[in-house]
Every structure is written in C-alpha cells, then in structure tokens.
Amino acid sequence: MDELPIGRRVAYWRNRRKMSQQVFADRLGKSKSWVDKVERGVRRLDKFSVVHEIADVLQLDVQLLLGRAPERRPESINCVDAVEVAEIRAALERYDAFSAFDTIGPEPPAIFEMRKAVNHAWLTFQHARYGVLARSLPKLLRDAQAADTAYAGSNDARAVANLLGQVYQISSSVLRKLGELELAWLAADRGIAVAQRAGDKLLAGTATYRVGSALLALGRARPALEINVNIANRLAPGDEPTSVESLSVYGMLLLQGAMAAARIGDSATMRDLLDGATEASQHVGEDQNHYWTSFGPTNVLLHRTAACVELGEGAAALPTHEEALLSPAFTAMMPERRAHHFLDMARGFAQIGDLERAGEMLLEGDRLAAAEIRCRPIAHEVMSDVLRRTKGSPTLPISELAEHMGVGV
Image 1 (cartoon, rainbow, N blue to C red):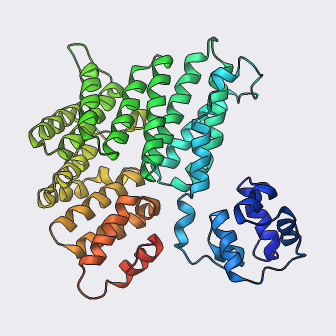
Image 2 (image 1 turned 135 degrees about the vertical axis):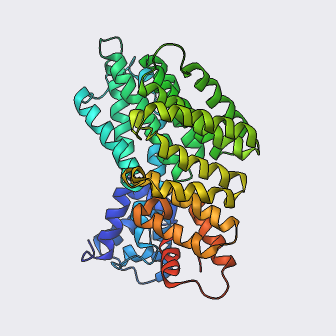
Image 3 (image 1 turned 180 degrees about the horizontal axis):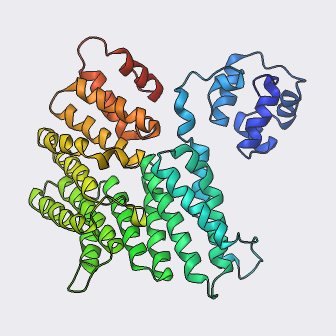
C-alpha cells in the first residue's frame, strides 16, 4: 500500500475504520465533497497540518499516510488502538438472545469449527500475541453469541454455552493485559453467567478467576480476595478422589486469592492460600494446562515470587525466583506465563534498587513475548521507573526497548 497515492491511503484507512465519507468529513470539519476529491486525487494534500488532522481522526501514525515506516514503536502492531478496542466493546454489548425474537440471526458456525477457533484463541493468548487476538475477538464473539442463540434449547445448548463462556474469558484476559479494565470486568462477568448455563462448575470456577483478576486490576483487592476464596472453598477437595482438572481450577483460585491478599498487605492470608495451592499442585504433579490454567508446582513458585513483589518485598522474591528458573518445567511453560514472571521480577528488582537486573528482566520478557512487555501498562510503568532512576544514560538495549515501548528515555 506504500506505493498508493496519499488519497487512496486515506480512503483505505477510512474504510478500515468503517467511517462513511460524511462522518469522516464531519470529524475533520470539511465537506463530503472535499473528502471525495482528496480520495480521488483531484485535490492535493499539501499541508502537513491537515495530514496530521486526518491521521488523528483515523487514529493512526501520520507516517502511514505518507507511505513511510511509522515512527512509533515497531512492535505496535502487537498491541491495539482505540478503534479496535471499540470493536470489541461493540461485540460485547450485543444482545442476540433478545433480538432473535424479532429477526432471524446470522447462520451460526458449526460447533466443531467454533471449538477449533476457541482453542486457537487460547493458544494465541498463551503465546502473548495480544494484538492478533484482539483483532480476531469481535468476529469470534459474534460467532459464539450467534451460536449460543441458535442452539438454545437443543441438545448442543450446553456445549455451545461452554464455548461462549470461554470466549468471554479469553476476551477478559486480553483486555486486562491491554489495560481495558472495565471491559475486562464486563467480559468476565458475562463469562460467569454463561458458565452457569453450561452446567460446568469448573468453567464457572475459571470465570470467577477472571472476575477476580479484573477486580484486582481495578484496585478492588478485597472483593477479589473474597470471590476467589469463596468459590475455591466450593471446589475444595473432600474425602472423595478429586480430578486433576478440579485441582487445577481450585489451585488457581487460591493463587489469585493470594495475590489479592498481598495487595491489601495481608501476608498471613497470602501465605495460607499459597500453601493450599502448593498442596494442590503436589497432587496434580507436573505443571499442566487443564482448563487453560497452566497450574502446577512451577506456577505456584511463580506466584510466590509475584505475591512477595505485590507486598513490596522484592528481596524475599529472589530465592523463589532462582528456584523457579532452575526447574526444567519453567522452560516448558507457555511464553505468556514466563514473560509475565520476568515482568514481576523486573518490579521486584526495581523495589530493591537493582535497576540493572530490573532492565535485564524486561529484556528477557521482551525476547520471550514482546507484547507482554510492550503492550502492558504495568510494564510501561516499570520501564519509566528504571529510566528515571538510572544514573547517566541507560544501556543501548534498554534504550531501544524503551523506544519500541513508546516510553521516553
């Protein structure tokens, strides 16, 4: 597209943003005729200020309109912009179940195709390809919602509700990563309601975990603690043998509860919950990915380090961090989980004033899963802290990563 005239590039991005010429013209304060002439090349765009205005309306880098490489971080394609978030919001706000009473909805996809798409979306998330996933979510949400409406009352209703519940959980997870916290909470809350219709208590458990994660990100640590512990107690192992799937979901609820307890400074509850998760992980054995939890002994170690960091005790996190890195299971974990750990440890090293190691952790996380570092607001905060407190100039790798992240050196 770089070879196209600028007017054609304007038309391309306007269409991609789903704007009519009239809406685009109104936002620019121009006439529809002016827009039409620009896009057909009849009228030249010879004022850089006007090109800037067009770029602002289209919410993209001005260099893209000029046919050049964008000046912003090269990895920005791994993240999302406001327009793409708005598309996810629109998909979340659909109410197909109600509109179906009046109109015939779209033809739903086949269930086996939906199942493949949902599994692919989970793997995309666990490989930290957040931008790719976010751009595919609107269609996945619409398809899952249409299927849920179409199969209501059939023998497949529960299976389809299960898939829709998973899509809501995926949406919540990626939105939380990208800092869209209210939307993350909305998607997680929808996930709980659908999981109940699916009749799957473990799916409801993981949906609760997503709600707790969203609440914690919103700064509501106490309700996050309560909801995780309450549901974990319902899934707690009893006298009867418990499946590894149930133990995995139970353990992750305890881990999320421990993070919430750490946030409010309740170290005693934090350690009790971590110990409970440790016991569950011993029964699970090796780290596994039941219900997309990645739960097991190594993940418990990573949460122990994260909880110490959350308490502000970065030094206490170091021994467990070293223990986790020595585990062969760590290198087998999904990229998102490992990169998340390095981000946690970047915070931990920054807490004890070891800015060099903090920077190394950011670089290590970036090598594993760039979007986990470049797209997350918390990573930007850590990088800003490292840059601000570093005496003299930062190292070249840190400077380059900061530039890719869009964090000023």
